[in-house]
Figure (spheres, rainbow, N blue to C red):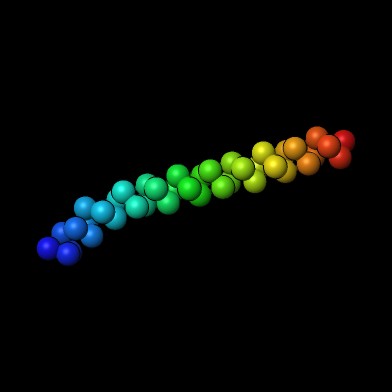
Length: 40
């Protein structure tokens, strides 16, 4: 029962993790872009 729950939950957690990582990467990218514009 636990194994089946893990199998059904893992894809969702992976998707959530990718989403969080994507948001962090996007935020750091926009931050560096902002810094680059300021230092121009």
